[in-house]
Length: 253
Image (tube, rainbow, N blue to C red):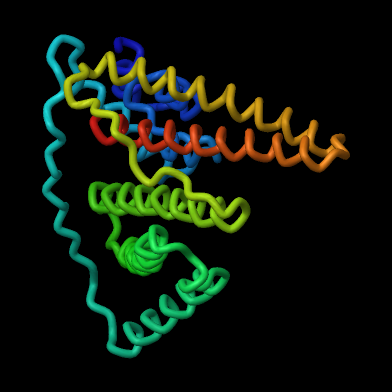
């Protein structure tokens, strides 16, 4: 904690040092870390500072309370003309259609159809937020960060839905859409340890899948290939369930 405080107070913050502190912290979120690993930018530095400051609100002694819905930042942007609004609406519509045309709603099972519709909504929201971000006046760092975090959360949700649809397309079986795990009574420290353990499980299972895929390439007997494919399918479902639980944990940290 002392190292993080020193980094936050340093006027000449080194991005690599902050990234190292964040990756080992209890507030680390996979989707944010992936973006931060792409390298330095003013946007990524702002995100890094914001996330590390969250550590000050975490105590090891008391249990985590129910997550409060944050009051949204009021974002005021300069007015745009009717023509620009119409052009943007058309651009968003074409962008959404381009993304979702790869899959037909009627080809999906009933469990995935609401997810498919949700994905369309996410694309609209992300496009609109990007326009709002671009229209922000200078020196609106708080509002900019709020928009960035919203976009990242939506992008993660979209990726999970694509994964569910892609799994159905390949294997004609459903990934779990929710889990029964309840983390409400765990402390912040317990949540962090649980998250680390789940991450380790995922890594080991992914390595196992890679080995099975190599075996399947070499295997010529059809029954054995089917058996290996079933093992891969079961393990992918287990990984997805772990990822859903990690998301639950991150929502509480």
